[in-house]
Picture (tube, rainbow, N blue to C red):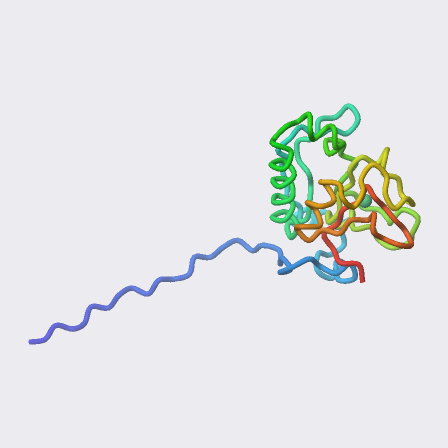
Length: 179
Ligand SMILES: [Zn+2]
């Protein structure tokens, strides 16, 4: 008598904890509120990821151990930082000569400086470096379009504020499309 075919157990999908939706690419500035919700609410914290810079970063008298960015920007930021670090031959002295150790801020809920719109810093989609020598209103300061930091951020899809015509902001790098 023929044996009944052995029934293989059907693999059940493993339930994963709910994660916030991550846009497949750089979000538009105008869609951030809809995508991520109001950043002043405690729930916004689910969008924040901590990225560790490979070199020693400072802000005034603070050592900066982690950069706080939106989860949708974190994989790209990891690549930017790796690229900068390797291009500097993993030399802290070289990083300091290029002012890339001078951190000036990440996630903070505020308006654009000199404007009324919500800053991309509010959505943890922007980082500032060396504010002292790259002031708002100048097309470039210490950082220029050929600077390593600018080239590495732009290579990985970030927007450098130094290129903005009406409101240049050379300290500023953001992972959101101006629209
Ligand atoms: Zn900024």
